[in-house]
Image (cartoon, rainbow, N blue to C red; front, side, top):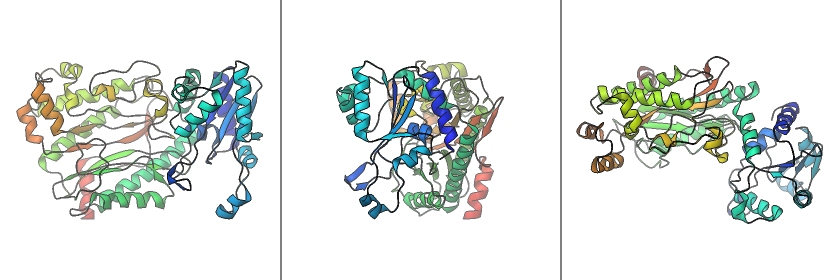
Length: 463
């Protein structure tokens, strides 16, 4: 938690953007796994954390814009809670830490919202993803559960997005920390993995490192020899000589800030000639993105330049043919990279994705519907303070290749006979985290191995 002045200032800026009515910011509650007292690890809503910093279940923040009053509502702890969990802070004590003097029970919140609704005042809230909050809003606002997310406040959503997208110096410091824990997780896995191990053994090492920093995972770890499956959460395979091991994982600090990196390493210690060749193209793609990062450029432009680099590399290797601009315009290159180049990062690993990519990643502009490009989460103009990932990839997905070949999709640009020589290749990607500065960029965290000789050196020392 930061000092209370930071939270007071964040709420002040929000009040400048949303002029009238009441703003309701819903925190998260406990989420039972199989019965009420056996819950998943608690994760606070990131917008609630941003404006209040309190990592406690069952809280709601309310800003009465018309009367210039701010509240936090929740259920206070009892002596029974103290018996089971030890000494606990009362709600008013927690609230004062973020500059809030007015607190109340949930019944008080219910009454205040009913009064506001009866008076015809605007009640602003953002998109809800937890079912309990949807049910609560349904009761409090007297609407059906299906209507809750139809009545969200775009005014509030855009205002919150504008504030959270621009990271402060304090936030950038935390992102550096989260990235460095993520870096430690990757380096440990790169040194630990060996032929004969199960993927879950390497995934366990990643978790061990995160826990050693009092961190958790920012998302479910991808640790797989089948990198051609983009979000492969299966860890049951045995690593074999000649495999590529794709590791995509990140740390979430106890204050909520997240890291996200991907590395690809040769299990045998050295890339094969074919693997090394494709890896050199992957890093060329990555470097072409980094060379463009600065305020004022759209991330969509950066993505498309990476696609052109990919297409040119595939033409050089005989897997594609034709004019590079035509290839990218057609989307044919997406056979090898069917995802976007990156996404915002912050208190969420995909920052504010619950608000929708159109608002967060595109500032209201429509997204492309083209295969590959439609999966670009971030396309808007980069601004100073924006934090995001850069993550090119190269994949040979047998099922997709077979489908396109059978249907003749983009056959004018694809040499399927040559492509089929790579059906057992798998996939690879490389990812780093960045923040835009006044005239350039900074890669978050300490130096990370990137080039094939750096990766092989680490693997060679470990084997």
